[in-house]
Image: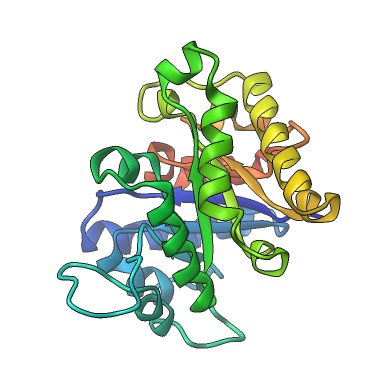
Amino acid sequence: MRKKIVAGNWKMNMHDIDVIQYLKELDELSSTIPTDVEVVVFPPAIYLDMVTNLTDYELKSGAQDCSANENGAYTGEISASMLASMDNEEETKRLTYCLVGHSERRQYHNEMNELLASKVNQLLASKLMPVYCCGESKEERESNNQEKVVKSQITKGLFHLPKEKFSNVVIAYEPVWAIGTGLTATSEQAQEMHAYIRSLIEEQYDVETANSTSILYGGSCKPSNAKELFAQPDIDGGLIGGASLKPDSFIEITKAFN
């Protein structure tokens, strides 16, 4: 069974008072969350400690980015090992994930696949799970190059890993043209790309690895369309943007599998 995951990327939103209120509301709603769904939030890094410690619900958390370097004179950067050291309780570990290669990092910070491969290596060395983002732009979709683009992103960013390390990676397919635009890939378009990604994994490794890899959809997923998306056989959850900023809508999405 692949893990079902609903992950909320807060991006650069909320202040500490908002985070406290958010976690309070999430705790109040937590009894309605299906027990077979792993819920994760990716807050700004300065709030990771709050998210890890200020909720009774077993909420998982992750960082939005990390450095490609282990340590050194890299002002403003946060290493994977620093992130891992924030939560070193093995049995109750909550800080588990880190986003890699989100389209906004690729677009605004010119992050290339080779750099992202180094970030993946750093995270796995620190026993954190990368959520590796991939997806095509509007122009690439319109020119029917979406498979070529995604194949390059995954091949260069992930396929250097041996199978045993790749098994600790989650993939998020996020069509760039559907992020923050109000547009959403149809469930058929999303399923087609998720199935294609799974076929790449099978080709690189084997069918068992492909069938055990969780692949999330990350393009304007919200309560109104989550059920249709999550009903697709190769969509294992969502990387949620705007809809994750309100606990009630975020929790509603976790129920979409049922």
